[in-house]
Amino acid sequence: MLRGGRVADPARGDERVVDVHLAGGRVHAVGPTLPAPDGAQVLDVSGCVVGPGFVDLHSHVNSVAGQRLQAMDGVTTALELEGGLMPVDLAYRRTAQEGRPLNFGFSASWGQARATVLLGWEPTLDLTSSLGMLGQAEWQRSSSPTELARWLELLRAEVGDGALGIGILQGYAPRTDPTEFTAVARLAAETGVPTFTHVRELAAADPSTPVDGSSEIVVAAGETGARMHHCHVNSTSRRHLDQVLATLAAARAEGSSVTVEAYPYGAGSTGIGAAFLAPERLGVWGLDPTHLVLLPEGTRIRDEAHLRQVRRQDPGHACIVEFLDEREPADLQLLQRALAFPDAIVASDAMPVLWPEGVRESRRWPLPPGGTAHPRTSGTFAKALRIMVRELRAWTWVEAFRRCSWLPSQVLAEVSPAAARKGHLSVGADADVVVLDPEAVSDRASYTDPTRPSTGVRHLLVQGEFVVRDRELDEGAFPGQPVRAGR
Image (cartoon, rainbow, N blue to C red; front, top):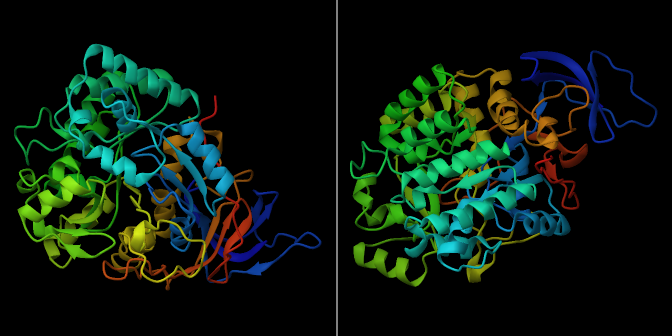
C-alpha cells in the first residue's frame, strides 16, 4: 500500500492525493484512505509524486547493468524497438532465462533481415556484431525483387513470433530504393504492428538523398495506413528540427498516425562504421572527425585518416557523436523544443555499459569502476523531468507521466495486452510504479561520468516487486516480464 502520495495518472488526466493498493502484481485499488489488508506493507509516500513507471520504447541496453541504471531513472519497461533483434523468439527466451530487473521486449529487425538475405549474415543477439554489420556496404544497397520478397517474409515470420513491431534503421542504408520502405510499411499495416524508424537523411541537409527522411515516413504512413514511429527526432533533425517538426505537425493535423520521440542530449551514440559517419558524409551533419569520441576509451578521433582507420578495423566500435552543443543557448533551445512538441514521447536510445576488454555486463551494484556509456543510459528521464517540469515548468506532473508512460504504452496497446496494462494506474493495470521526490529528481550522468545514477526515485516497483526501495536498488530483484505481441 502506497499511502498519501500525489498520484498523477495520465489516463485520468489528473493528480490526486490518494492511496494506491497493489496486490498480485496489479493495481488493486486507488482512492482516499483505503483500508490496509492484514499483513500488507504500508509505505508513507506523502509529499511524493506517484505515477506509472516510465516505458522506454528505445533502449539498446539489453543487460542487467544497463537496466539497473534505467531503474534508477524511473524506467520500469525497457524495449528494443528501433533496431530490433533477430531471431526475436530467441531474444525473448534468452532474456527471460537470464532475468531482468525491468520488463523487456523486442521488435523485428529490418537491418538484420536484410543482411541475412543480402550478406548471408547469420543473425546474432550481440550488439557489437550487429553494429559491425551495419558498417558493411553490401547490405546497404537496394534489393532485387527476389531479395526484397525474401527478407519481407523473414520480417513477417518474426512478427508472427511475437515481435512488437518492425525496427527500421533506414538511416544506416540511406541510399536504398524508397519503394522498399513503403513495402515494409505495407507489411506492418497488413500484420497490424507499428514501425520504429531511424529516418534517412533530410533533403535540407543533403539534397542528393533519394527522399527526405521525415517526409518519407509521413507519406508511407498515409499511403499504407501503417502506424509509424519517428525515432529520436532531435538527433536525426539536428539544426533542421523546426522544419521537421512543422512537417510532422502538418501531417498530424491531417490525421497522420506518425508518433515521435526525443531525448534531451546534444550528442548521440552508435557504431563508428555507420553510413552517416563516413568522412565524406560528416559535412552533411555540419561535423568533422573531431566531433566523434570512441568508447570505452574516451579517445577523440583526430582526423580523417584516423576515422577511416577505425571504421576499417572495427566498424562496430561504439562512439559518441556530438551533433549539437548544449552549452550554446540556441542548440539547447532546439532540444527543449523537441521535448515540448505536442505528444512527443521521451525515449532514451540507451546504450549498453562498456568496460575495458570488451566486457558488457555486470551484476555488481554499484557498477564496477571504469564503465562507460552515453549518459542517456543513466539520465534521460530524470533530465527531461528536471528541465521540463522543474526548470521550465512546461509540463505538469500529469503531462510528464503522459509523455514518459502513457503515450509510449499506447503506441503498443493495440498490439500487446501487456503494453495495454502499462503507463497508467487504473484498477487492473500492472503494478509498475515509480515514486518520485519531486524536488530531488535530477540526472547526474555526464559525458565524463556517464554511469552516475539519477536521483529522486524513492521507490520503483515492477510487477509489484521493489526494484528500488528507499532510494536503494535491490540487487536480488529480477521481476521483469516480457512485453510481447499477442494475437
